Length: 149
Image (cartoon, rainbow, N blue to C red; front, side, top):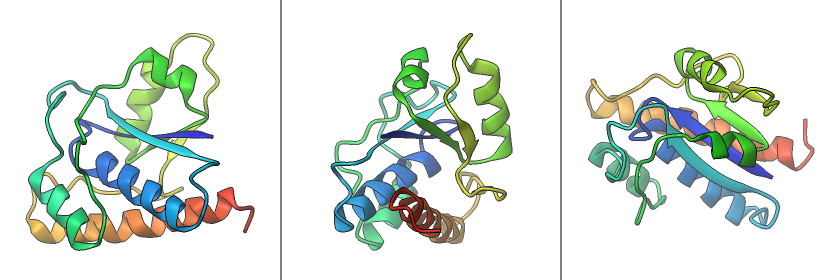
């Protein structure tokens, strides 16, 4: 299964979600069942590392973003993904608008009915809150993949 996390620039939330989900899946022995990736809706940060505050927030919790580079979503991502998870409703709407004709890839919010607020314009506390939500969301996602309610 291929799961893609998407936010505006692939700079804060989606890279964190990718590395948290990948790490949790490896710890749970699910690495052979699921592949995680992330992308952004804009190319503003394409080729950059993740936001330094995201890198530090991940590192503080044992997740690495070494070698990560931001990228913009492409039509090929829709073809590859089995599930696309948007970090907020604005991203969800933008993904639906960019969906290639005929594509049926499920697109939904990462946290079901809740959004992961973008911490970019805030202080470090916003990144801690982001990590709390992403860790909880990744745990729920992996439980669903294992077939637990």
